[in-house]
Image (cartoon, rainbow, N blue to C red):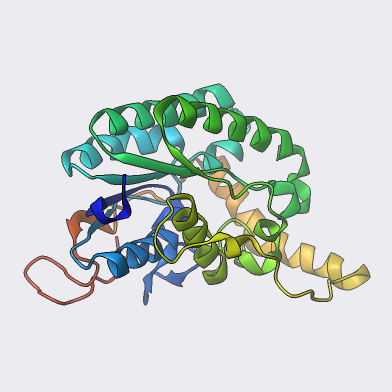
Length: 272
């Protein structure tokens, strides 16, 4: 579909699509989907944009809670990015996760939308203790590519590029992209969709920097484990999700700079 026909964009997914790591819940979340909407708006100011993503959701939960509302919005462009929360859990089943993604691909494309998704970088290169998850990511990526090919879905290949595991593209928790990371994801998606002004420069490496070594590296890992890993494990053991009680930040199709009843006002992105 030519870029000029993307006038109704809906984003489905979890915390990355919601925008965690790019702003906060007080000042508002931006995120790669908002950045992609900005790119689309630059091409056509009449774009309407909705973001149904909610943090903490599995692919099955995204399908159960977001697919029907997305179809009701009659989008012509949809991004579907989910599966990382499944990948991190003990009972991960790549076939089941990919099945939920493919079901969304099928229904959305059948409704006339152009769908785009992405592949995931090796989590072990971002979080050293997650190295055993590498093969999970490889299998999920292979299944995403196959499902996308069956339904004409565009895939932004963010896996396989060294820059996507550069620590500067990730926030302090190493689970969510930093503002620079969200910028690169949006650029990768724009490039995959062949939007005007996009190109492959998003995959270029950042300038070299000195890595931590020895005791400083160990201390950094211990700080990360105490600040982020520990609380995450506690939530998993308690069966608590970071998305509990939250709703989509942009449930309606709106101009990027408008809210219902308030022409020209930008919504407080990130508030539940």
